[in-house]
Image 1 (cartoon, rainbow over the protein chains, first blue to last red):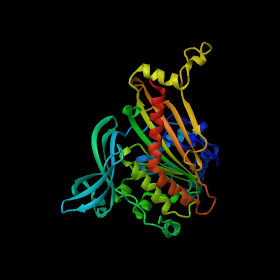
Image 2 (cartoon, one colour):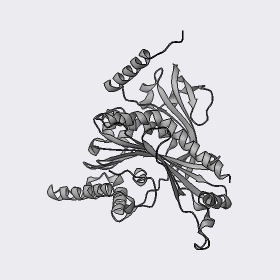
Image 3 (cartoon, one colour):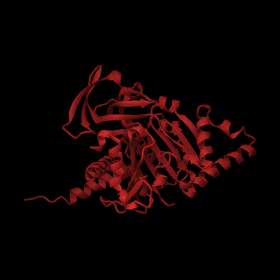
Image 4 (cartoon, rainbow over the protein chains, first blue to last red):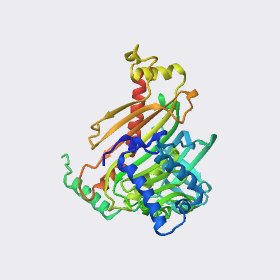
Length: 185
Length: 223
């Protein structure tokens, strides 16, 4: 499949037209709709529209019908601006708070230490608060449907465990470095 | 600094490869502990089909066809979480062949005034070259490609500048879209692991380079 920039930004650019979409992608969309309609008829299912969850069905149909008719309009209205970001690790956990060592991702500088109230942590993230756990903290202005509001967002990392392949790869790399280490005598 | 005029920042991570869209449902993500339970429950599943899935998690949206997976967000505080989610998905699908990766940055700026807005286009592509045979020429968009990456990884780096569709015309909005594109360097069954690793290790570098390119361009234009 040929790789193009337009393909890569698909869905983000506005006023995107089907003519800009690479043929295989466009065909995939069209073929999936056609297959859905064929399946609906074959299985005597309700109308395809009814197979889509209610809340989003209108939007989805609007977008798909626009794509098929040659237009794709996507203009997200919710975004953040003037965001200050940190990445941190938990270094101490207390009864009602935890201490984090922070690295500023917006402006380089020395590491900072900050205390966070556990109430600021989402209940579903509490189990992730462990010594060494990574988290992201951001403050910025949220623009939601035109309304601007200052927000602070704290979110713990959800990372996959290492795979055997990754473990082996790192072990091999460590062995290579160890065997090729040259000491100055 | 052009960043002083930044209004909005969007990110879009795209993988090309061979995917099974139907598996990428919010409850699968929850099962792999990649998202919160409430997020899985409240996710707006717009379409699930064997050839196409499209879902909104509120802080990010993803869509996948059989040969393309895209995960995007317009909410900058979640960009790192978006990256973690992309990595988590493909670490949990190690047999998925991945062929290319794009880290796409789309930044929207509001230039300070009409003169700067005009000069910005005029310096990028001198409009005097088009006079007098084009009446009142204006730059609509410009795209520059680095065909061989500076970091010696396989892929390319593209910069596209065009009027912003987010920042109103009264605020002289421009958008700069950067496609940081990586190809697999090794043609092996585990080549996809390389792309996931590239995403892991080059994520911050991609942001830094994007920022450097934009600021250096702004300084060179000397507006």
